[in-house]
Length: 203
Image: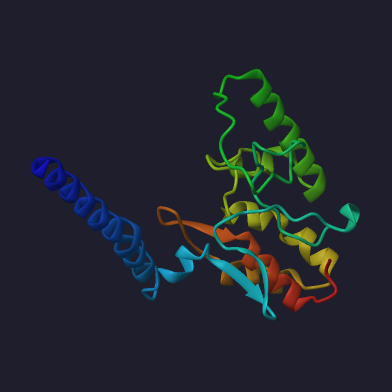
C-alpha cells in the first residue's frame, strides 16, 4: 500500500509540475517573447490600420475589387489558386498552391487567360505582362508584386485616379522594399493605401 501511495503521489507531483510548466509558464514565456519590439507586429498578424480601423495585413495579399471595373483605380496582387475566377480575388481564409506542374494543361490555360485579361486591362501586348502577374505564389496570398508588375499598372491607376504618372511612380518607389529573399517587391496593400490617401476619391 505504501508503494502504491508513493507512486500515486509521485505521479501527481509530476502532473502538477508539468501542468504549471507547460500550461502556464511556457505559454506566458511565448507571449512575453512576442511582445519584444520588432516581433510584436508579426505575432499580431502585422495588421495595418488607418484612422484607427484595421484595413488588412501587410503579410496577407487580398486582391482589391474595384467598384467599377471599367475605371479600376487599384494596383492588383498576384492571382490566387483559391480564386473562383482566373484573376481572383482569392479566399484569404485559406492558402496553398494549386500543385499543378508547368506542363499541366489546366495551368497553362489559366496562365494564358490571365495574360490576355491583364494585357487587356492594362492596354498592353500580352508579351509585356510579367510572369508574377499570371502565376500564383506558393501560399496564394503573396502581399507583394514585382516592380515590373507594379510599373505595368501605373498608367491605368494614374488615369483612373487623376494622379500624374510621375506621382504614382513615386508612390510605387516609396512602397518598394526587399520582398522575402531581398528581391525588390512592392507591397500592394500599402501601395493602395498610399494611392487612396493621395486620391481620396478612388474607390
